[in-house]
Length: 619
Image (cartoon, rainbow, N blue to C red; front, side):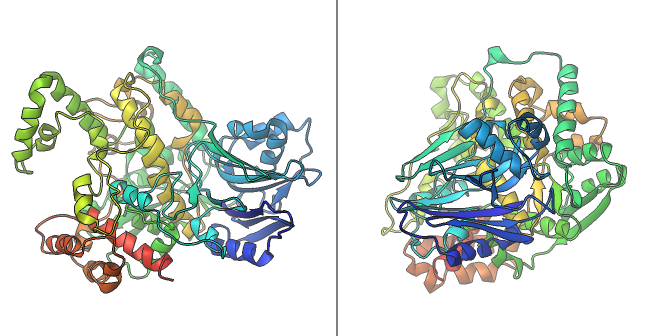
């Protein structure tokens, strides 16, 4: 895993300063502590930081083709590089043993269509000197980041936002629409970033920039879900057998490494299956790593131990405490943008512990989105059932009754929302609803609040099944801009490469054809995955209640983090930003500390923003 950056001035009389490029690479040294590399030719400059994984002695970057006219900087891993090399070697000369050079020659052979030939994770940029063109791309699921700032004079890009901030011309101005997105969903999805003028390249997209400054951003792949008439209706055991084969392959190709390798082990179905499949294909015990908590209600490490014992892994467990004074500033700085998902804390810890033993780790990310695992998907089933028994004309009346029910009444949320579209359950977990954001913003803040679920892309079509609509939404937003951001930043902070075999696009395209009844029902989730690995994973893990990789933030904000929260949210600095109503925020803080309400999501959203602002805007 690595970090990349670059500067291209469209005016050929302007030169790229080595010092600026060096500052950019220094800011992301955590992504690649092993070596740096530069290509500077007048008005174009590329920078690189390397974390050596494959072909450690070779594959230095920037990497060129035979005549030096193509230059590549690449962050990621290409798992099918050996097969690609065989296809390309008749027309191209290979001088290294790694995956990087394969991309160079794939671009020469296929042009901008080269991305469709890559099976892996990547954020990369290719400079074509002959055509005076820059081509960039991000992998299908958005595992690797790519930020860029483009105007009439230049384009500047980097693996992290902090990299672009090293350029002296950039003005740090908040994009208030992006802030509203963040306070709604907890993250900022591409193409926006928290700063005006800086964009993110979306998952599955490529960018082409010409010498006159024209820029084209286009999709080369998106997660397609089949219509009901396209389902693969083979029997469950037959589908499970094929899935088992695809899982084995996806894990196997991600175990290729010239440096020590291990796995995250949370105790859930996904990571347990990955560790089991790794163990079947390894001649030595797998090194595994898990996180526990002092608060027993959040500690799943006993389930992780079940798998560790069964497969005799070399297991390391670390207990996360509420003493976050040292690590929290590092996390805030590393994420570049405000980020609500506080599972970033245990993810950072498990990455830190793993890096003490290995350089590469496999994880179970993507399992919920690909196989159908989130509780909100099951809520959709219940919603569908209620709407099937309550006539449409009666739903508003039933919903009004639900609004008056106490929150402790079982099923009150379903009754209250019965007159809404089932996609309402994707909005159910937002940080601040529209009415709450109106109370939060000051009169000085522009009227940013959009009603309801205000994204442009909600679902493929209404003709798709309910589960596919939910999965499609998560694949396009929550997965690339929350889950994968969390894993990338936490692992890269610790110079650790994390690979996600369950997010193999060949595996996904198989699952996209599987009927929803083999993914989730009213009573079960990940049905086909569990069938495929039922002989590998104990029933205590396969069929236990889903918990998720979480942390006891509710209690921390009432106890050890309460002073930090109060000092940052209620002081003069926060008030002078003029964004949020002080009385509203103060009331949230007071209610939470006194135990009268659980505002952990709202308060962590606000605290994360304020800590970000003090790190990036006030310095």
